[in-house]
Length: 304
Image (tube, rainbow, N blue to C red):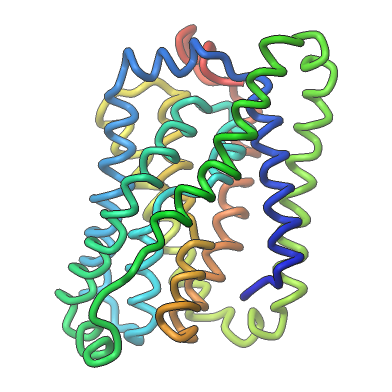
């Protein structure tokens, strides 16, 4: 499941436009609130960078899957959150500032956490360790690529949107409804384009691989929701962390698979199916939560 360079450019521009639209409603006070209450962000990083990779490792020990599929699960789980999670959180009326903060921090931490988590979990699973033996001794993550992508796809459109939203609130209020409609349409187009370009591959592997990805994604969403619930977090924070932990940067995983694992088919299938399915599961949460505003005054101040 891959895109050519022109498609990647178009998808990148669309994503930047979505982040710009999200940022029109963000204020500096939202991020200051995250700094004053760091527990939700720290909990999100704990789930994203530690619990999800290692709980996935435990799951692979009990699943009787092909080693490539298990490696794909371990790699996706080791990846940071993707920028799509910020838009989905916004549409689901979650704490968007918290989502952006966790995405940014987990992406920076991934420079170290991704190779360390993947190397450790893959080597401790006997099946995946044997599969990798003699093929790949280490995972080389391009730090400059992660930082560059974070700046271009998140930081710049975020700052631009916040500037417009704060300096021209009347204009922002007029265009916001259009951006929200555009967001839903864009996600639909993402699914259609990806499915159409890989239809035969999807049909041929829609059984076991799809079941694995759906179960893995459901477990990640449940982890984010359960940890937030146990910590007694506000409703808007709970929505943000549920989505954040459940939407991984599967594009980064696919890039690593293509460049460092020779495009190993089973690993690529897991990553590719994840990239499709987490949009579906995210939109389901939007459909449920969009009709139910988060409870509490503090929560409403951070939600759209």
